[in-house]
Image (cartoon, rainbow, N blue to C red; front, side, top):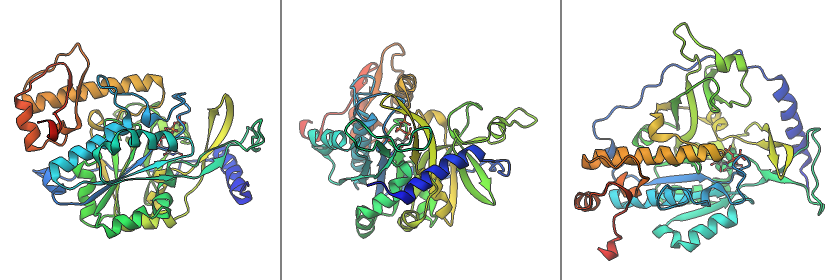
Length: 397
Ligand code: UTP
């Protein structure tokens, strides 16, 4: 049954999109990253949680399977969710504590996501939870419901901002609190470069901050990323599809973008903040998308809007090459694959001092990013310049 008040909210969002003005926003000052000489010590002995937002419909990619399960990596063809699960596993081998992993799915992605994990024995992880986000009706260009040939109303997942309420509603947030989780990161399934356990994202959380938000420098005025800005003394993000074009392109005297910092939707949170955000009402956004060949208004809650529920937020500057290659369509899928190969070659050189061959695909296992002593010893005896490099499992060594 259609929720009438929700429908009114959706129609109001379409109207306000047409009149939105952002001229009152001001730019954020350059964020200063935390400095420490041994970043890995920050995470030592800490119990962490990681929530993957994997409920999207992937309309721009046009794939029938959810983004998280399609073959992706350059040599071993690993899907994005496998890459994330293996980072969690590698992290546990390196630090001796397994982070809790939760995956937000939707009606569109739930079955395929669970099947991937079940077929791979949960990638050897002990604690993987799933929760399904709700859906909202898709509206036609006149704001009316769309009914399929079987009489059902066409719907889509209600946006990644659903993550907070979903985590609490499912009981996972409560469980993590009881299990002593000290910090939680929120990550997108479609950004394979990201290090979910980046010490800079967690360190302010351990010191009592509610929320950390990663920021990278915008590449151009046209880049499709949300902008960090200040709205009435509070940090916010304005989505690229909604921002005033004048503001989006504004440059200073030196030619730098005035609104210089981009959101990559990578956050660190305290458990108390997760609870606050789950209870906070978020605004509904609308965007035109093509679903099943029809142009529709899709209504979504955005994860970054929960920043308004945080008492303290720290913006964390990160290097684009190390953390951002989002997969949105077939072009960015290829770009992300190349970015991962380049990142793996750089990492291989850092660890071995040996250059991987530039002309062939190259892929490192997640252990290279959370290297245990055992992995480093093994790596020294197995210098390989091409192909795929993964240490044998403990049972086979
Ligand atoms: P996008 O906004 O790029 O959406 O999601 P999408 O569904 O993946 O792709 P399009 O817009 O239909 O082409 C960014 C991240 O947020 C997650 C996605 O899975 C992706 O990790 N997401 C998006 C959700 O978890 N739920 C949603 O309702 C929407």
